[in-house]
Length: 197
Image 1: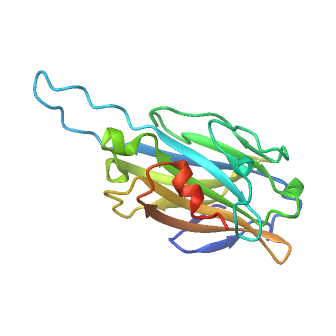
Image 2 (image 1 turned 180 degrees about the horizontal axis):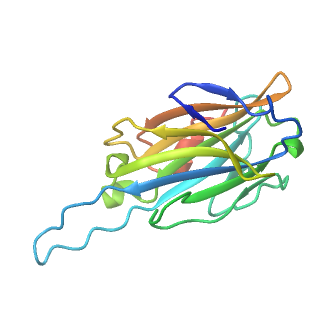
């Protein structure tokens, strides 16, 4: 049964799930319908949200290669894989997915932070107040069963990036923390800088 999480809530992924080895992290969002301008007004550009995973060691990002995103779809360890970029967020279900093989993640990595930023947000004058129905969910890849789901319901107007949540190792077990923190970082590089030593 899927657990619906609130902001800041933590849940064990391995408890009651013996042998859990692989999870699919689904992230989704929809664009708020925007008013059309005048007859000759330019058509608004679609909002391109990009999901990324930052693999941390002792809570820090130590290497640029530990960022899994549309430009680096597979972590060097082979344990975290981004399934590709969705340019518009249109349609139902997950817009982007990241697959994590929990049982094979090298021991030095203790945390995987899941972030989403709006591509060229500043240039396009876009922000998360123009996004609705944002969520992150974790699915047991063995049987495609959703384990937990977190809907981001706050007003994130003015925010150009978002820390959705994190999967982390604690006392030998994997847990998930629903974060839902908006930021003003203009891109993935600035988001990643938050975790550099």
